[in-house]
Length: 271
Image (cartoon, rainbow, N blue to C red; front, top):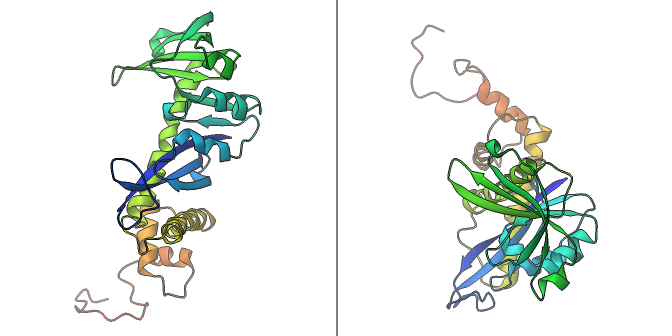
């Protein structure tokens, strides 16, 4: 299993929601989400105030042995990475910070045509990080030729090819797509209440809506984009008809007048 873990900040008015302190006089809540890349389904959601650092949300994660967890460099907390993932036989893939102090203890050859620059085994040399994570870490340096950006990926997996590590991290962007869909299409741009319970409840309702749409799309084999499905369901909420029949009806011949609807213009085709 491969999971992507990230958070999304939902801004609030601090005067109306004084419990949601963020920074610089602003209010917000964070939606920490663990997304399964097998179907882009959220398997874990943790809501906190905006000031809670992303790395602290890892303490609540349900860690699965031998699974892969993709995270950005905001989650580089070597004490947690070692205790929560490495000690529980789970794998992490994240990006290294610029100020990371390390020493190279081993190196493997790479095919530089693919964009790989190096594949190294390192140990941390910082006075604290060396005690937080006392074992080896794999450092994969990769250059994206389309943007000319160089990325440094760190992981505790030493078995997968280096290019696969780089491609795995690319899949982390699926969680950003999930956040965009939930915040944009499920109407979390405004809230009906200002209490912590009211705000959290509305977010949970949006998450449940997303899950129901995904389940319905798979169960009824609906061949359309999730956004189109969400818009269509909103128009037929009060119709007592199976969802799959609604989409079959839309695909039927428009010239057949057997739906009981009145037509504004007469049919001059002779049919």
